[in-house]
Picture 1: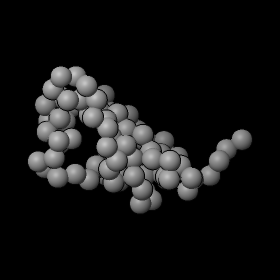
Picture 2: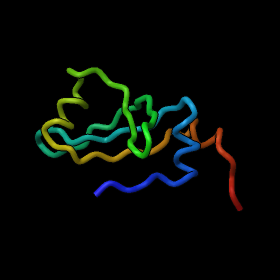
Picture 3: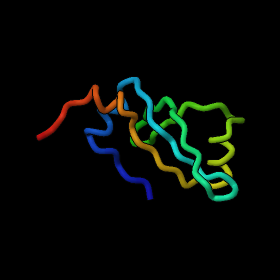
Length: 80
């Protein structure tokens, strides 16, 4: 079930930045690559080519994980 993005995540994704996207290879091993990310409402958008390995992996198995890149985190505000 889709979840709503928190205001902090929306703010982070609304700036130009990278995230790491992990998809699953056919043998079950992970494939992690940096990608441009954005959003449309509460949907994360990943910039990739239709024939890329990550696109093929995602069509075969939609389970993915993403995390913001360290450069994206440095641009954010720290919280105590």
